[in-house]
Length: 486
Ligand code: GLN
Image (cartoon, rainbow, N blue to C red; front, side):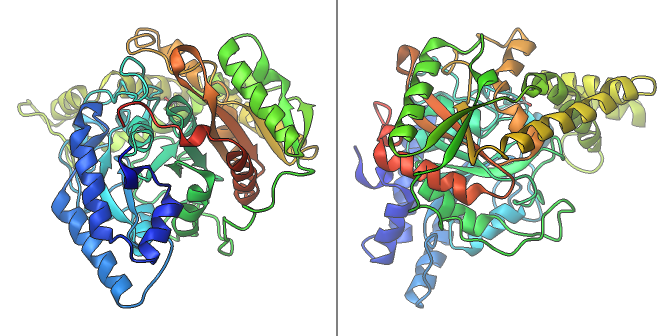
């Protein structure tokens, strides 16, 4: 144990408020750990001078009498959010070294609340992947087991929080990229309702799905971050205009009388026995705490993966068209004419997975296939959303596994894209419906690797979801386990 780093965000916040530690001391402590654990490859850009300047500014604000639960608390950002003071690459060679002229709204909101940025976190290229093996800057190691992937696409975020290199890390979830890596590394990962967090300054992947969220040790910490992070942003056309909320308001409610729906489709063939055992034990714990379990059905959920792999690549192919070697990012060194320049730039700049998705996306959007694939996928997406709407008429929350297995090994799925895509079998339906959803640590499975429990709520009910997660975390200590050596 090395003390400070093992405290939760809420605990650090109390130390700062009592002036038992300064923001500068905290920032230096985490910067030292980041340096010490560079072998994880969790961070892509660390600039201690900028971090310490932010920490000094936070201390100065507190000295002037300002307060706030996040003032002086460190955070690290997935390298899919653009930042003015650190390079913003989306883990792609296409954007290597790119400096943004502005901060993403999520980054700006957290900085305004006084959070101190520790640097930028590795991820899959353009957030496409489930294992972090698609990063142009090398994979991230899972702190629990160097042979295991940390999940993806937010593998830097999950590894950083699991290894206690940061008390909180931002991430994005398009089809599961917060929940799956959180499950694989034993941290709490929460994706809010689509439209709650601003997409302004998030390097775009699939715009109708991209949702910013956070990874922390606890649900309470996630609620504290959400209070500053979420909110209407006129710069994002799909941002929802609702009055501000206190996401901590249900933390003390407990789960007595809460109806938890358990979808039978999430326990079918394909779910490994170790994950099933840990998830079932967590459900029993909820029952012991006073919740009622009811079996529900999400009949169209199994269509989530095929639907997602039409819609997400379609949107990606459109979003990635901007990387043409002219506006920003990589440009091929030698070329004959404009067309040749664009071709060579894109051939050199993109890795295999973005290229695969550009091809799939362009195909499903092309004349003659648009109706057969894209429109059909949009129709089934609606059916999946209706399944959830029907389920939430019967229950308050839905619970089940996050992943079919614990973290897999490096290389295990890289030769088979479909096997990789199936890692998101249980997370994609919630993404297509746009509902809030979390992964919370609920035990360990094969080879001592962590297991996550997925909790889903109806649109805009993240406070209820966080309350239930907090009740579970008050009764269990899975979220406090730290991998050996960290
Ligand atoms: N693994 C999924 C994909 O590769 C989800 C990624 C994400 O949520 N960003 O698209």
